[in-house]
Length: 105
Image 1 (tube, rainbow, N blue to C red):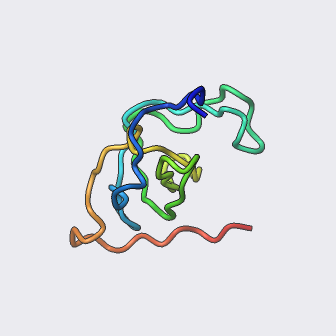
Image 2 (image 1 turned 45 degrees about the vertical axis):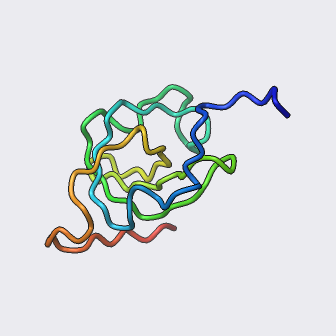
């Protein structure tokens, strides 16, 4: 088991999620399709650095990381992202109108 290649030695799941549902977040890097986004080519840009979105779901990955499903308004994509790929733009309780994600078919 010690030969498992991990993205980081940090196990985020030991703490509460950094972001909360409805938080307004900003992508701090460009995100390309790694093959997990259906209908887009591998390598195609899904999210541009600086694009704003809202956390609509929180899951886990590899029993190590939180994955935040973020609905990006400009592109219309819902993309799963790690904490290190996001910055908080405004907390969900910041006095803004609450964000309600679009219905998915």
